[in-house]
Length: 527
Image (cartoon, rainbow, N blue to C red; front, side, top):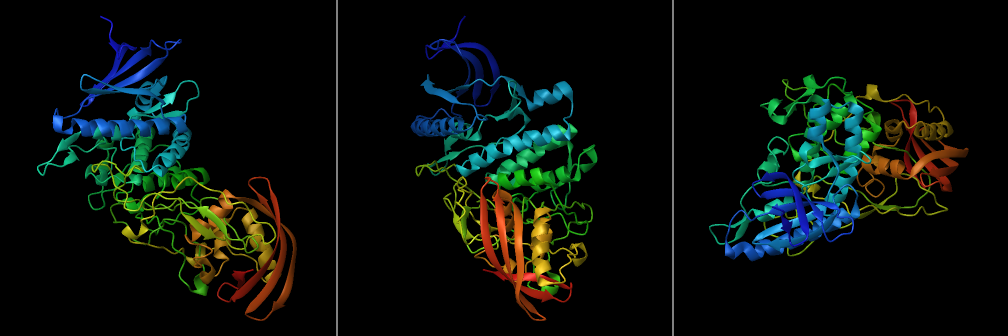
C-alpha cells in the first residue's frame, strides 16, 4: 500500500531506523520533478504531555538551525521542510546521491593517505563554519559522511542536536533535561561521553574516522594506553606519512586542551605539513602558543601546541604542530585587525538563540567576533592593508586549561649568516621568501616575540599574517643608519606582494641587537 506522508511525500523505501525513529527515501509529489528527498521521522523518547510542547518548540528551533546550515554550504543537506504528524516529527531534507564512507570502505578496502587527506581538507572548512555558529555536530563518523557521486565531495549529515531534543525528559526535580548522551561509542571522546562535548570533540571524531579509513580498524579494535588514555594505532598504519600521523595524533589527544583548538588550525596543519620533529619532546600538547623564554642566547622558534611534558615510556608519540603557513617580518607600523580563530573550547556551549534549551551545550563566553590589533612585525607605513574578516571565532576560554610551552634545542636552529646589520635584514627577508618560517621567527628577539600588541597569540599571530595575507617580499634597498658593537639601526625599502595580488610598498626601520651566543644580529623592534 502506498504511503503518502503529509499528503505530499510518497515513501519509496526505508533507508534506516534507530531508537529515535526511521529515515525514508521519498518523492515530493507536489514538485514538477517529483524530486527525491530524505525524510527523517523522529519520535520523542518519552510520551509525556508535559514535555511535548517543549520538544515541539525545540524541534522548530533546531530545524531553523539546520535550514541555515544547509543554506550556507553545499556540504550539509538542504532542509526543504519540516512538519508534525500524529505526535511525531519529520524533517524533509535534500537527498544526497552517494556512498557513506562505511560503504566505500566495505567496497574497496582501506583508503590511500591522499584520499583521506582530501576528505579531511574538504570537511574541515565545513566543521569550522558549523563551530563558528556555536554548534557541535557530536556524531561525526563514517556512517554520517557521504561522498557525493557527482563531485566526490564529502557531505556531513545527521546532526546530533535533533536527536537530543527527542531525548528530552523531566528529571526528579521536574525540570526538562536530556536523558541520553548523543554520539557513537569509539568515535566520541571521553568528555562527550560524560555529556560535556566541546568543539574539539568533533575534531576527535574526525581523527578517529581517518584512522578507520587508513587502517580498517574500528575504534573498539584499537588499544589505548592505560596511563594516558591515548589511542595506540601507529602499528596498523601502512604507508602513512609522519605528517598525517602527527595531525591525527593531535586531533585524537585524550584531553581537549591537547587537540587542535579549531578546525581551521587542523586544516592548516594538513595543508602545510609538519616541518620539525623532535623525538625528545613528549606527546601531550597545549593548543596555546607561548613565545620562547626571554633569554637572548636561546632565541628559538616555538611551534604552536608543543608541550614540554614528557609522555609515559610505554607510549612515545611525538607531535609537532607544523609551522602552519607563511611567517615573517614585514615593514611598517600598521596594526592589522583580524579575527583569530582560537580557543581551547568551552566545556559547554549554547546556540546563538537566547532561549536555547538547558540541555544544549552552553557557551560560557558567547561566540562573538574578536578583533585583535595585530602587527605581525613591521607592516607597510604608506598603505593600509584592508582588514580581512573571518567568520566569528570559537569563544576564547583559554584560561580553562593550563598553558604549556616547549623550547627547541639550540642545535635545531638554522644558522643564518648575519655578519653585518644590513646583511641580517637582507637574510631575514630571504629566509621568509624561502618559506623558512621558524627560522624567521628565530631572528626576532624574545621581547619582540613576546610583544602582545604585535603578537597576541605569539607564533600563531606571526604566521597568520604571513600565511593568510602576504605571499612574498621584494627587497629594493637596505642601508645602515648607525651601529655600535651591540646595537644597529637599518632602513629597508621593500614591497609586499599580497595573496590578493596587491603590491604594497613600505619603508621600515629595523632596530637590531647583537646575539653574541649565536654570532648574529636579531630584530628587537621596528618602526
